[in-house]
Length: 326
Image (cartoon, rainbow, N blue to C red; front, side, top):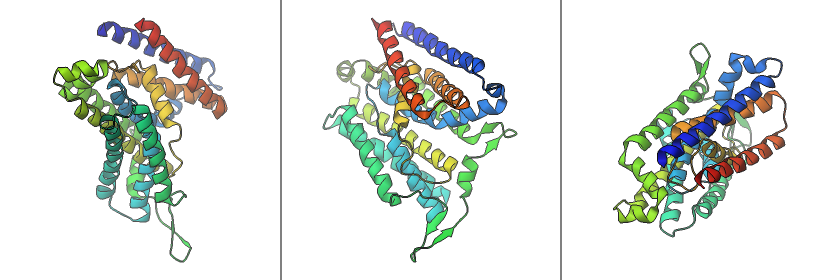
């Protein structure tokens, strides 16, 4: 049954990607779709979504959902920008601190899920609102940029931190973004954890049948907590990358990113019912969404239409899953 699900999900994910690539070739914006820079930029733009989707995959496999990832991204983007730009902290201190902050947000969501036993939707919705409020409070409602406010009301302009420039740079003759390399590392770590650790196997067991997993001696609480911590951690990685790309911490960043991350995971074939999924298929979903957005951008499709299309894609993908499972 699991092999049949994997094969069917892989076929659907690959088909979705092929269809998007064919559409890109047809509606190529006067050949812009065939340029190497277009594909490089598509990967770069999709990388933040892909990093979020790594954590989302783990949570959904466990039978949960994390609606807070976009707000946690914004909170971490503001926090790391304040530490590196305004406070001039070393990246050896600011980056681990920002990652810990994201993991702490994930831990808080997980605790709400496993102890008061709130529905994951409600628990992470509460964290989404809380983290967004924290981001606005920490930033004072403004973007944390290189214009540093002074006590007398003036501004002092400082350089972009070297760590931001490094993350936003390109390698291999300017053909590969560092953010894309970070994405690849996140995918590799997540895939390894799912495929080669006891915790990864437990995620599938808990998501497939929580009661049976508990009776089998699996620590359901610890398994779920670690999934939400991992999701918060990856949201923090995405927040750091977002801040580096924008060279500022925007408290309004990441709005709607949770929708895109869920779309990526669902298109990749991970079941919203839990217990089934794959990081490799999530990569297919990320490429599908990334190329779809790039194609729409090249053809000047309004953002409102893109959002409606993303919503429709989620519905279609879930309906295809249900049809496969019947």
